[in-house]
Length: 481
Image (tube, rainbow, N blue to C red; front, side):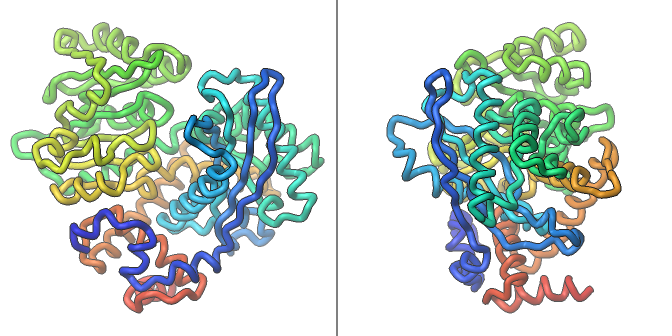
């Protein structure tokens, strides 16, 4: 694949490789359900759509219980220029398609789903109790759609997403669903629950673990003259960035965490230390402390911890309050761990020196939709690795699937922290091996476009959709083996 094609859209990529994307779309039966609208006791107005994408039956699940539409429940603020009734359906559909793309990219047969909850307020400021109440309303509306016979609603599994990620919120959904339906398998209606409610112990770390695996795979064959470490900077000190930092700064790690950014009270701040001094140590103690109080000024807390426990770095710490400063701190790798639309045409100029400043080796997309097509094309143009979200951040979805499988098990199966970590590692290691072979067959080093083609082609073969014979042979021969 030439660099000129690096910024192509999904449909353009499909066309390049002879994949009939329209036929695949028909085969996968995407649907969107308008679940409803309601107002909270604080007067906030909510609108909910649930999108479904796929027609996969898991051959390992003889009861078909996991052949459902799996995906998060995302809360999003209505903006001034948004027509919510026109926006919500297509947006939910795009997110659901992203879920099946992610599953297929790591060789997991699972349908994609997504609930999009629009609200006329800042979701970050909505009280916890109201979020619980909102998910209770979503459970009620989803059951109504089930009663109406909607196949997608019957097979929906709801999971946490932006602003609904607290286990207490998802627990409330499951309890409400049980009360409404009296379903003995009610725990299987939701993922991301607390341990007490049937959740998975590893799930809070699972996305971060897949990001760490992505970094290890992408950096495995890179040697930097004169040093035995690779420096890493992290955009986002949240539920993905902090556990990732813990994994990447371990005692036997070859990585140095040299910068991390976060938002506090509407201000973006970045803490950085020089390369070559071992980096900041994100211990279990520090990460637990930071995650226990998400509303604190995390950058200030990190500085205090480093000053106390790493005195050799104390005088070398720099703090910047400039928006986007994390992109200007020199490092080998940039891990995007907080939000979408970080690297865009505006933030990634068509200039080698400025792209080198963003990351000397490459970018790991720990957050979804963090790199635009234009930005991706420029990264590729100047020789940077760009590991897409489909390969970098599927850990949370995989852990959720394991959680629900345990909940639905008639023999009471239960995967603990280590067992889940090992199973996810096995899935991702195998997937990365297949992607290396696939990219070699395509003759490309563009991992993001390779992942798009892989996911589309794999599903096209499963549904008997027309595509390039070489792509078909890759998957057919693998099945035969």
